[in-house]
Amino acid sequence: MDVIAVTGAVKGQVELPDVWFKRQGPSGVLWQAVRCRLANRRAGTACSKTRTEVSGTGKKPWRQKHTGRARHGSRRSPIWVGGGVVFGPRPRDYGYELPKREKRLALAQALSARYAEGRVKVIEDFELSQPKTKELLKLLEGFGISGSTLLLVDSVSNQLRLASRNVSWLDVMPARLCGAYDVLAHKSVVFTEKGLATFLAAGGEA
Image (cartoon, rainbow, N blue to C red; front, side, top):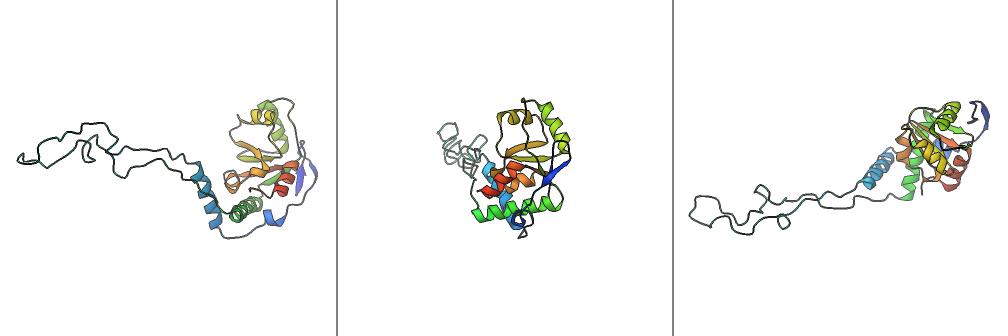
């Protein structure tokens, strides 16, 4: 694959291993990876009050018999307005982990899909002289990068983090932390030279 310079010219060539960029396998693995990521992002803080937690008197509303009305023992009963909730949501942890092999396979399939679409690019390493969004956008324009993009670098410097946070269509992250969901959430995947080397050395998401 071509390595693109800041000017947009081809700087050199780099070999992308088939195990990461031409991988086939069951599509269900990708679904599992996305489901796992979304589940781990859930806060799980929803909480409703049971009849023991709602405020209200404990007095019996009316006597048991001879009123012509249904019998009731508490105004905190779920059938009363303002009463407790039956089987309502309680705080819980929705997160879980996939086996390492499945995570690696899902990441390889996601990268292979983007590569087959021609949406994987490798660019030369660059550094910002100052944390300016305008400077970063100028560099990205030189590389021919636009639209929904995941930029995978060796490490995210403070200047790059500050410059990229106002670019809504760009996400920057260390290549070694990349997962299948990150790839699928963007239309294009761009590696820097060092980022690609780090990714291949680390084997992607642990």
